[in-house]
Image (cartoon, rainbow, N blue to C red; front, side):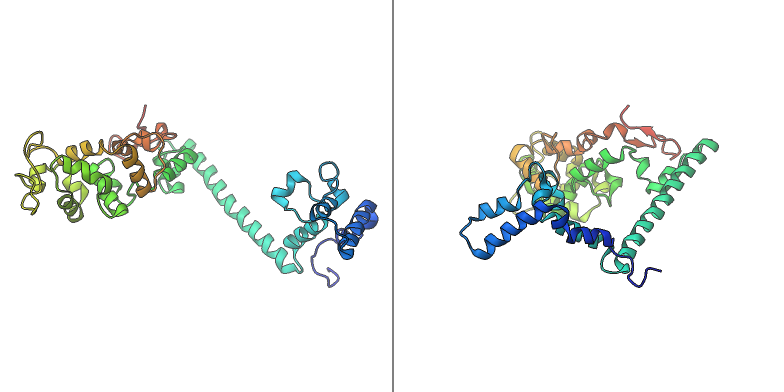
Length: 319
């Protein structure tokens, strides 16, 4: 059916490319001059030879067999004829197999897209026709839409949080101990938070051990004395917490840790962001890493949750 030639680049196109010197005489003249200059080694400078090949670039690029300047970032700087030839071959190739690959890929994309479109239309029809049915969106998005429907903004915000959020432990989201435990995993220790903790009478090494041996949720309601002991902070580790001054033993451990986060600012905060892989631009201390409005600056107004705990009615977090 294809006369044994296969599905290839149009013969008319290849013919015109081959005969461009006859179709556009100026191209042939410029090419001949350039070729002669090169063969004769006439002493023309490289800039002169370059200008010959690029003649007319700003007005009629085709005169010099060139690509228009405004298209070179996309099409490259090779000659017009070679670019046309390579583009045709990249689409159709030298045989039918190359074109078949492109056609198969396009067909797969169309088929996959149609499935999503059909699902979305079905979702809309079910929501309109069945009172109380509002969970189909979550099925399509893996419950992502139940958190935030501002997909582009929320996605960008999530990328900028880096590894601040432990997505495998979202049950402890908002727990200061969870953030610090995640910090120890990313930085290999308490890093810039060690100093502020020690200034409050807490032995950083003992606190790191406490975090590694316990779930963050189990420590949320612990007192400092109950978790770390009482007495005076000593070098030999016989006491891990100083109960003197403003640090009573019955002080909440989470409260003390959150308070210490407030001292991580400036250069220490920049170090912390580098360790956590985050790029937040609107925070002034580590405490802001606990604030959803700072973590998701462009999408927090679209955050939703189930306030009644029933899982039936989504409501805005920020009204």
